[in-house]
Image 1 (cartoon, helix red, strand yellow):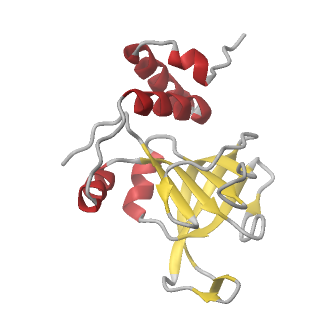
Image 2 (cartoon, rainbow, N blue to C red):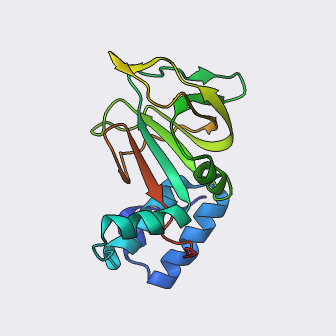
Length: 181
């Protein structure tokens, strides 16, 4: 019988035990447990306030383990396949960052808003560069002509909005992997 990890169970563990659990969750693609471990580790050692320039430098070298996107209307541009995979629609994301994400079992979660759980979630299996639609939202023309489509292995998880980002997208960075500066 599999253990069901909760924030409370993880909080009762030592930092070393949480790091070990986190690594096991990363290897197995258990994004919910990985996120709980990251949240507990951050709670115990809140990051020091950094200038915007310092945050950008450290984020450039840290892999993104989670991409949260606001996608309205629901499933705009999403293509579901018969094998429990789907293409995510097109998003403006750095190809270099996506390549790093592939190596750490990253996920994509699509939301209708920050306040709602994701309606689509999956682990990234591949990606492709695609032309973007002329309008990405009602009356808003695109400034970047191409973007990234993610091929996702779908799960039934519904995640809350996480990470640092903007109105339409947010990235969850892997705090457990050392960065190279």
